[in-house]
Structure formats: structure tokens, C-alpha cells
Image 1 (spheres, rainbow, N blue to C red):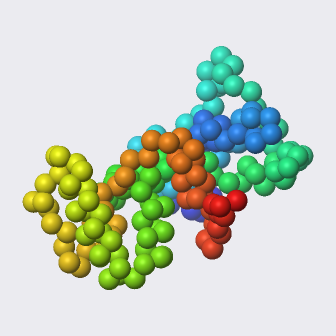
Image 2 (image 1 turned 90 degrees about the horizontal axis):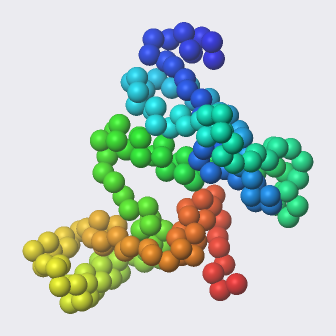
Image 3 (image 1 turned 30 degrees about the horizontal axis):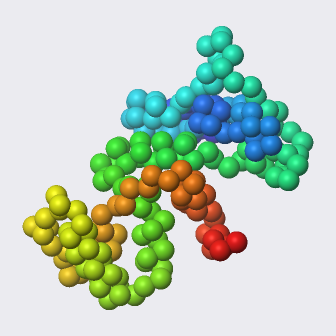
Length: 189
């Protein structure tokens, strides 16, 4: 790391995961977990990610749980605190998107798009997307057919993101997006 840090343009910053909402599932207290990130992004690019614990201002804002022992029913606290908080991941992804000049995706639509892509063939997706688009045009007065769906369009590009207003559905989407590859949630249970 010392050799890497000696390279031109390489720097680091420190953040506290409690500032991104990392909590113990049992006590609901925050895990104070300082983490340093070494990077070679242009100066200031990642500054918004380096949030520190609000308690560092001298005023106690929240309590911290020790990252040791077990959280009964959840496992070892040291392992629980290894998972990056969703707020940190989404903030980092947004910084990367801005830096790389990418387009913004509606995070609430990601699960729906993934399920559709895995469930239907491309021809079935095209039919589904056309039906959904025509249904939206009938029920939404301000939508206009001036933006027809291209024949070869992927459903992710053809479908408009659907807003998610239900808090329980939003939590399910966040939980689904946090699952490792090949994991599943049994919804009927």
C-alpha cells in the first residue's frame, strides 16, 4: 500500500459506515466502522462519500454497538458489519455515474427489469412491452404516441420506470437488490 500511495494522483479518504446507516439488527444501534478508501480519482471526485460519524461534532447524535460477539438470531457482528450499507453503495454508484458521464437509472425499476429479462424471451418481452406501452397510453393522458417503441428495443429501455410508493415493497426491492447471485426470496412464504 505504501508503494501504491507513493504513485502520483493516488490518495485516500476515510468514512464511517454509521453515517450511512449501518446498524445492528438486534439493538438497532449504529456500528461505528471507520473505513479508508484508496483511489486515484481526480481531487474532490469522491469527497461526498467520505462522511464521518455525526457524533464527531462533539454532540452525541446516536449510540454505537460494539462490533464483537453475536447478535442473537443474526450471527456474528463482525460478519454482519462486513456488508456495505445500501446507502453507501448507491452513493458510490451515483458518484461513479456522474464521473463516467453515465445515465441515471431508476433504482426501483431494477428488480422488475431483471425479473422480466430472466423470465421471458426477447420476442415475448417485445410483445409485453408493446402491450404495456399501449395500456399506459390509454390510462395516462399526458403520454403521447410520439415516442414509439423501437422494434429491437430491450424492455429495460422500452418500459418507463414504475414509481414505488409502498414502503414494504421498497424494502423488498432493496433486500432483493442486496442478495448475492443465485439467491432467491420465496414470496409466497
